[in-house]
Image (tube, rainbow over all chains, first blue to last red; front, side, top):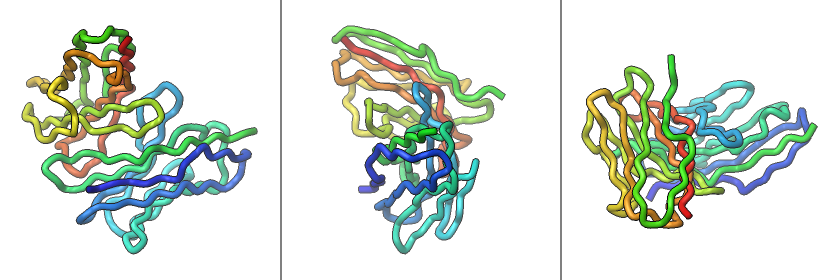
Length: 113
Length: 113
């Protein structure tokens, strides 16, 4: 079945460091890919998305490129801030009888001043 | 415009009881999906509804049921609560429940004692 694998956390970085969170997926067909962020005690917020191969999603300095050849959608940011501390979830959705999001297990990011 | 709203925000129940969680989608959205997020894990799909019809169901027991009303709001019901039902229950809405973005509410945190 479809699945999403994320690098395990926590990831601890100093402010202004470069961030990469790896995400790979297994799916038949052509899924759409998403990154959601969850701040402590809150629900999920959409961070960015890509709907087809080679698309680059971007938002708030975060970027991810849909790589079909490597089935990956790695999240990157050039300079993290303390306020970026949160849990990041990679997810996919594809055409099916139900359009359900399939999530990875999440990666906790902690940015220290 | 208001986002997805959920009620209540927190709930404490004992084993064997029944619970009803409520969700109001973003105005104009006709599809609602429910997810269960156990602490430390990614959300798991429970149900999707579109135009008051169940479109999909995840791997959850029959104790879990849901419905969608003519105004597109939705209820999730869980009977005979178990300790393992303790989780954050997330509602997401989308325009038509297809490949488009799902927007999440803040969730209802359920604790079963």
